[in-house]
Length: 152
Image 1 (tube, one colour):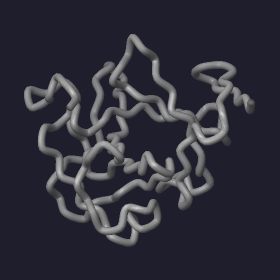
Image 2 (cartoon, one colour):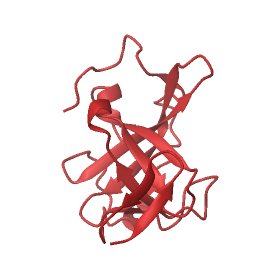
Image 3 (cartoon, rainbow, N blue to C red):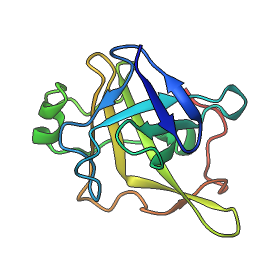
């Protein structure tokens, strides 16, 4: 069983096929192609994405449906084809759509709803879907009055 060292979590052992693969990397992180999802039970629904390659790189994410009810993904068909989803942009049980969180010095957090991570759970392959339409904020305040308190 492989083990990686995380600056955030220490030693993490994981099984084959547990990691999420991003074949094209992420914008700003083109060499980062493998992330291990880490759940901390008392912090759910937060999901940490720990880089397999870089011990001090870990993204904090939330499912978009925990932030905004009725979120509609608008991804490029070519991007969806990379992860085996064809042209279907409906969010469902086989698709994990995550917003990356950014934290300010004062502890407040914003979620990037315009460029979510989209992961096909069947093959554990993902992309960052940068949406050209401006329907969603790049900095959506977590904890705003528009926030949905339960995930569905």
